[in-house]
Length: 91
Image 1 (cartoon, helix red, strand yellow):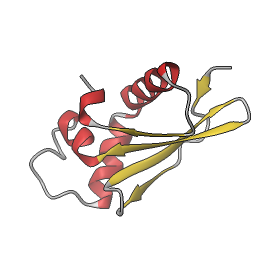
Image 2: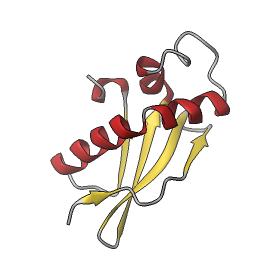
Image 3: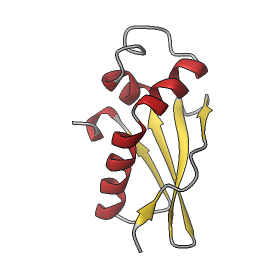
Image 4: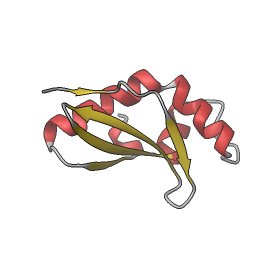
């Protein structure tokens, strides 16, 4: 099977300082976290400002396609049940 993202929901995880979303490989759910620093690197509206839940979720929405591509690439290298995507993953 291949990784897909049929559920568009995402949430802000204050404890991890990241946005959480899920992917699915067949019947298996895969959790992903995108660090705020990774979002700020790619989203000019978030860069250089205080990160709020609203800004982080908006940045995620603006970058959703590229985030899903990076998540798929990470999953194809090493199939696990959870990933944290960092700024280094978004080269």
